[in-house]
Image 1 (cartoon, rainbow, N blue to C red):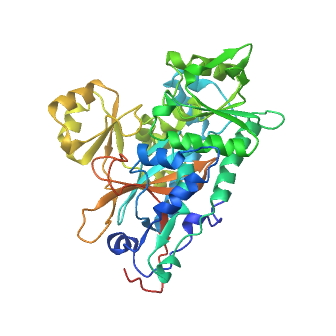
Image 2 (image 1 turned 90 degrees about the vertical axis):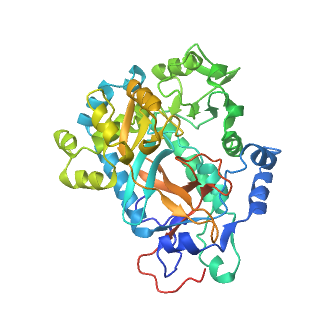
Image 3 (image 1 turned 180 degrees about the vertical axis):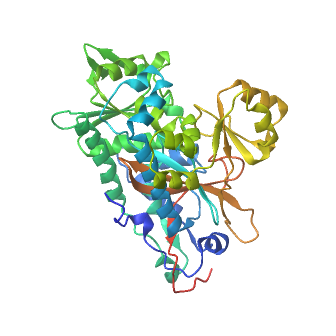
Length: 440
């Protein structure tokens, strides 16, 4: 797939207003929740899925889409391409892997599925705030995109065309490509979707959707806690079922917990294809990497070309490691910074600098944190005179190609899926030179 491909989420909305005006004044596009329930109910291999989503994830899907300038989407693609270019450099891999866990140094040709490049997009600034290597929500967003509605024909004409079957096929193709890249012969036969205590994970409904997707396509699939796996006679197994491929949703990124012992053994023995994997996490998702990626001098030392350095300097907010030497300076500048644990995930233990107390600051200094210059998130008004919601954008990436976009709406410091009316939202691209007017 190349950048010239017109993906479903990028079809122009054909509206003569800027994205910011639409986000603040267009309320006539919304989510058809009955269509969402119907889509979940149609998953015959997952009875009760609609009820499970209602119970577990009441704020999973936003009522409204997010509008983004097409130029910003193009810029996001440039930033993704620039990061991919840097990570492919031997000098980058040598420097990053030298400070990474041993599991990250094991080599594999598998690329890792569902990278999540997360962006904040404002009126005149776009910033890559982090990279994840086990980003959830892609399959859920395929359902979401097909369930949008408008209150009038002109608005319905703006809808992007979302083909859930095509999105599912792209996902299947990714896993099968991982299987081929790892040099496996024959067809992929069995998959384990793995996370700690999966039944109690917030996105457990998506695990069930993936299990059903694999099964519909002739692939045996199970959802499993890593402790339920065993490594025996050179094979990774779940009960008596040999596992060909692990779709890894665990946040034990280096397989260091005792529950991950079988995964760790299988990883080092190349006994199963594991995707995403520890090496990808170290090369991309370790938040200390953002300090390198946002430092033009460090990148020049690594041999990164000037044009790539310029894209990254403009697209990644300056990030610094929190050290004892830098503590006084960072505290003085804290109101302009966001603090994140280096190995954090899901916005846990992350803080806006203007919100932290001396007690929290002590914890940050004693932990392994990075400080990132704040790039304000976008805003979406859900209704007239309502409180605005913030949003970030997630680009789902595989093998360097952006395959899908989604927004996440929320209130508070970080995305949380707890805001009524918030959650995942589809992204509509607004062309820079549109001709018609939009009546909100």
